[in-house]
Length: 319
Image 1 (cartoon, rainbow, N blue to C red):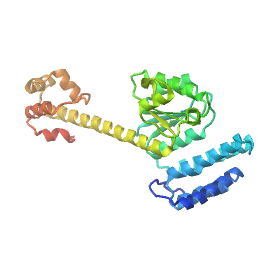
Image 2: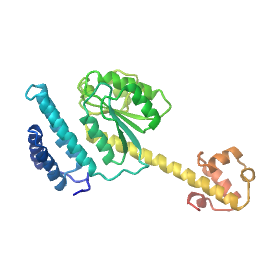
Image 3: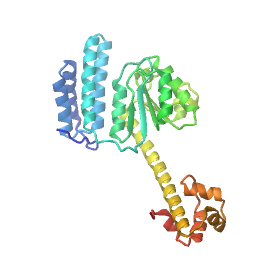
Image 4: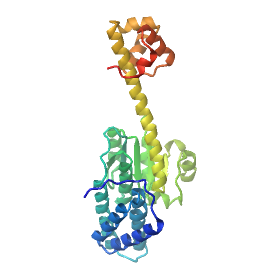
């Protein structure tokens, strides 16, 4: 049965460890049903979804990866665990509430040449949980095609994931292209190909620190280096708040413009006549009526007097 996933319930560390060990053992032994049961136990007991992604899923896969690097298991064991993990991520995603169509857009992809999908997929799902629309492109996206897609989709956020030593250069090339365009896109770099190579043991959200640490010009730097999903989530939430403010401002401009046009028409005034009465430029007034131009309180006062209305009337929908 579908259940709504929440992310605001604090978990008990002892219980977390018990569930994590049970989940890891199931993952290592290829027991998908038992692994899924562990996730369901966690959900039923109210463990928050971010910790399920971070401490159950991500940490277990990291441990599996370390075992493979240390020749304790075969690549086949690692691939089996990865596939079980992807199936569980698909299950968790199916329980999510649909994201509003007007939510900000993020593009998440691994860089060209990188076939490791789980880290990028976790970030994509965490963004979905936090009310972002997400274009998840999967693995090994050619840089040239990715740049074309970004130009077409105009996202607010781009997350580049890389687990290979070569990933850094790919991230750098794509980010430089993005940062030289007029389009404002926030860029996050994630993955062990970045964090391990440069011994990054914490998140960075200061471009000066990122520039100094990675040796990249500030203007071509990513906006955030992802080491910990919980801190990345804080960064993303701040982006969401800023986007909400921008949307609210645009909406208010549209309301004001529509009201002015409506009241002007009711008085049988042309744009030029209202502009003249208000001692404003007609081109400026036209832009305001179309919701394309910010307007000062003093200019609104002139218009409201010319329309014989209170200035407050211009801020609330009249039609």
